[in-house]
Amino acid sequence: MDRQSESCCMICGEMKSEGIVVVHQFICSSCEQEIVRTDVKDEKYPIFIDRMRKLWLQLQA
Image 1: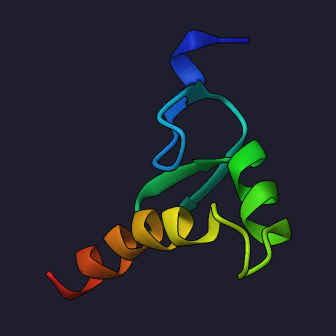
Image 2: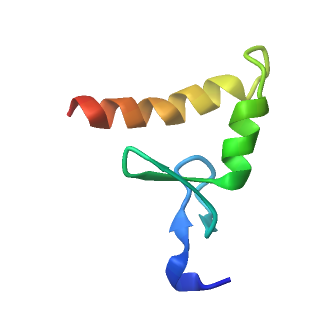
């Protein structure tokens, strides 16, 4: 894995090379998949919502 191509995931905070960029913020593939599979009743769901809220706040700034 090339360290120069890694970015810090806004969800887990780890340096990863594969993922997506949403509103100039990187989300690693692992977190992206977990977000998609997480049920609204899961205890992790509010954590994802809180972290994703940062994206929408940046759009309004």
